[in-house]
Structures are given as C-alpha cells and as structure tokens.
Length: 68
Image (spheres, one colour):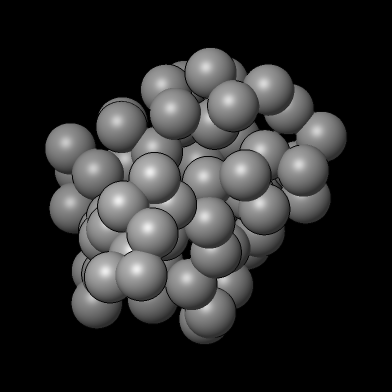
C-alpha cells in the first residue's frame, strides 16, 4: 500500500466517522479492497473501527489521533 493510497483513504474518512460501505462508495472501490486498506491503517494506528450499537452489522471507521 503506497503512501499516496494511505493519504487518499485518510482524506476520504476525514474528521467524521463513516461506515465501511460509505467509505467504499466514496472511494469507488469494493468492500474487500476497503477492508484491506482499513486493516493496514488500523495496524499502523491511523484508523479505528467500532461497531454500531444499534446494528452490529455496521462497522464505522474513523481516524485515530495519530491519523488526524
């Protein structure tokens, strides 16, 4: 995953939290590709995931303090 790709994903998330579906639609990529990107950014502590309290199927992603 290149630096430019990381920046693109981080910019797409912005300061709001998005669902994985919203992120993939915003970037024009598949959910699988979005998951790989978010996994790598989570491993590097740039992004955090959290499940919706109302619907456990929804996963929100947001930037961590390091990602901001």
